[in-house]
View 1 (cartoon, rainbow, N blue to C red):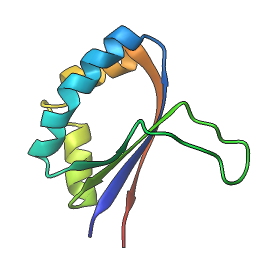
View 2: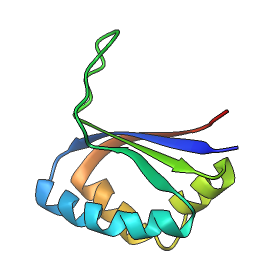
View 3: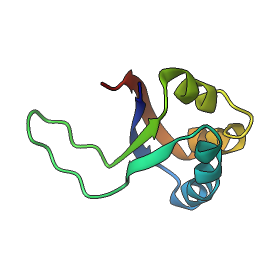
Length: 95
């Protein structure tokens, strides 16, 4: 069953974050993932949640999503992201 990684991002260093954005796609592809949403317009439907940036990824399984997150392919990009942005990231199984 598919799994989805949902990320809320507050960019603190836009220049460094651009480097991150360039590195990420190749790492995602290795694990069978793809972008479903990547920084497009957002709006609140309920509550006071107003994220600056949202990214949604789809992977073939929860295991593949977790493998990607821990992978050597993603590690260099992850290090940049951790310096350049504040993020909250979850993974959930689909139906």
